[in-house]
Image (cartoon, helix red, strand yellow):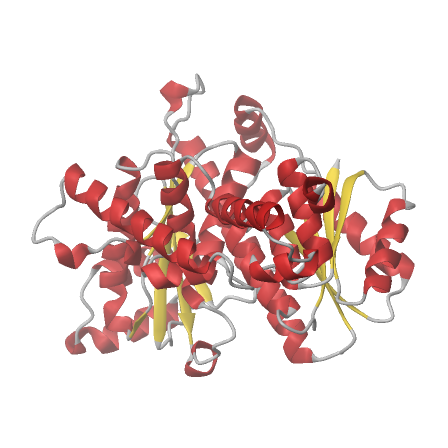
Length: 444
């Protein structure tokens, strides 16, 4: 059973699409509708949403911005975009952010249903038992292994210093192995598989490990596809590395936060490796640097980021820039790390308390003010306080709205405004979900 969220600033369209899906016979548990991006974000933060269907132009927050926020919160959410404009730029941006389809208004009913069926079918792929998975890979999976020489060259590029003396040699090696690293902006992502067989009772020999490593490589290439200019390759042991690159034009496109997008990819990779292969993994993400001579530095950064899994075993995606390496002349102690993390959460608390009533407050904004990624802030906040960051925002909003209802004569729409909601109707839905009664019932 699936939960679907429909977002359009025209209520009639929302209702029409909801009615169409309700009568479709599809395996739908709950259908939610929202009339702007901020309402949609509340549903994404509070409910288990499997599929987001969103209009692209909605006033205060566009469908593109909503997709960006949705993918930060839950990178595995599937998205179908609908638009009144057959604009290549919008379509390209939506697909680059992971939209499964881009439909033009007026919506053809059968076309929408086919698109939804296709997305849900893709999500229905069963997760196998690990022993079954290894057995099936051994029996049926005939690999066209990546060319060993190409893997070797890529590993040399990220581990050996790039000097002027080696320039001609490196270019020749790249051309001979169809490797294109023009940049000039680069980042790295590394996935380290956890194939500890003793914990699972499944014997995984070197050949099976290579099969799984190849399966991860396929997941990487399917997720990144043609929208990402990248090179993916085996690293040492149980690892797969990715070099992402941008030219001046794509890097200069400010419509996408590149680090958030890299983290989105990292979380999606971790999710899909676990979903389809049944194994845990740890993902390290580097900063973005300009110049191919910094590839060894980026490789060093992803390795350092992955090491933090030892300190945070319940967390799996780490961005190098989240850790203040410059504060320490040597490896930080556990006390150093705890103090740094406590300070991040403390500052987030302060910012939320000062700004929870702000319309359009997002996790991304709170993270930016703390100079950390949304992914890491969410993890730290929940670990330190026991409550999800956005649940905490809603708690503050609800407690303040309760106080205003009980102690003032303000109308519902005035209270809604004061605690940061776009519409009184949406405020009432959140209020009833939180307290179990409506604002008017509490007033009585």
